Amino acid sequence: MRYRMTFAVGLAVGYVLGSRAGRERYEQIKRTAQRVADNPRVQEAAGVVGAQASRFAGMARTRVGDTLQHRIPFLHDDHKPDTGTGWPDDGVEGHNARESGIPY
Image (cartoon, rainbow, N blue to C red; front, side, top):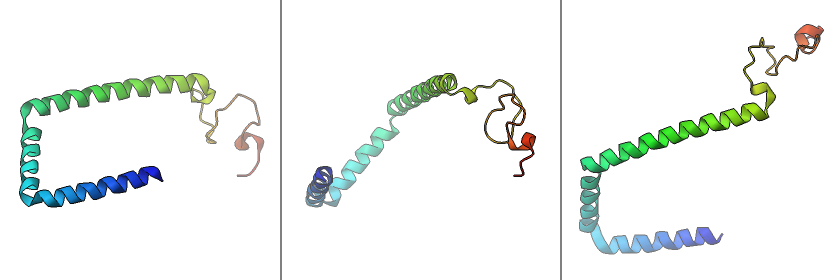
């Protein structure tokens, strides 16, 4: 609740200060922000940061996937046939509904 109140107070203060600054100041800030965004150095830096973020995300995805495969046995790709149940076939006859004759 405290955070909501802080956010509401911040929103009110921003509104009051923004309305006092007026449309001219808004347009000036907007032009400055557009110039910064269009700057080739800023775009290059953003591209580098985006590439690094993608690389780190890929590494994290690989590490988490490897960890999960070690901890959760049926995530291993052992090239076993698909049982159609979503669970791995442990090789025991009559294990799933198809082999046991139980109707679906």
